[in-house]
Length: 194
Image 1 (cartoon, rainbow, N blue to C red):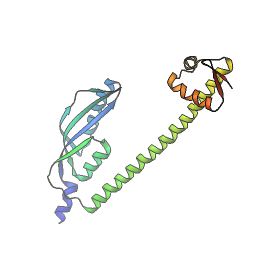
Image 2: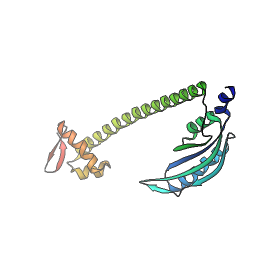
Image 3: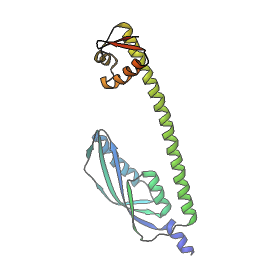
Image 4: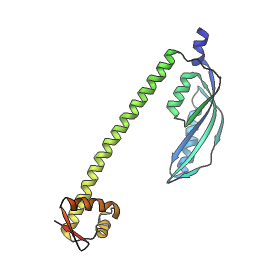
């Protein structure tokens, strides 16, 4: 049983992994994925046997490129670490066909997973709070810009859009809200302060 318990931590695992980079500009994506693979090659517990790069592809306003790596990883602990550290899109263990993972290995994996999930959750909550703060302040700025503009002159929605730099459709949402709140009024297609 002692030999079986050591297999997971010490086994050399043959894996196929796909790592993708998404971003812009195109040249940055091309360079970033190659630098990423070079960084992986520096890890003494990983051996890259083959790397097969895709052609770069446009995805909306971003560029995408992936690399399929054929590699050998030393032990299940390093395999799990590789997944956390390099965030592959997918990973497939080719050899050995069967692995034995001890209770401590499984517990460590689950605890690492939980810690990372809690960290991601905290980051998402911080980003949401920051986005809410920015949105609230941006709304106040647009509101104030409309008031200032209308103190000077009666303006159409198109004129307000040109002066504030806010897209006409987006600005219309603010103007409609201000109309309902009786802060401004509309006469013959022109807005004024109420």
